[in-house]
Amino acid sequence: MHPEDIENRFAFHAATTQEKRDEHTSVRQTCRRLADELNERLPEGREKALAVTKLEEVMFWANAAIARAGTDS
Image (cartoon, rainbow, N blue to C red; front, side, top):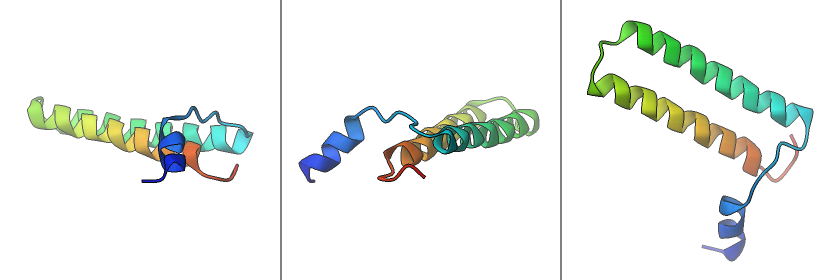
């Protein structure tokens, strides 16, 4: 792994444009809608908790992809 990759993974990546801020918001809203849907449809239990946790991971990684992109788009 290149040192630049480590640096990029652990650096703070501020949303430097309105477009990026909007993309982050869109990801959060989309994941939230699915979380609400799963919460309504799935029975309580470990599996539901894991599904919601994995959806949180989706949101985090999607936003990391936006934040870590080499361009401001």
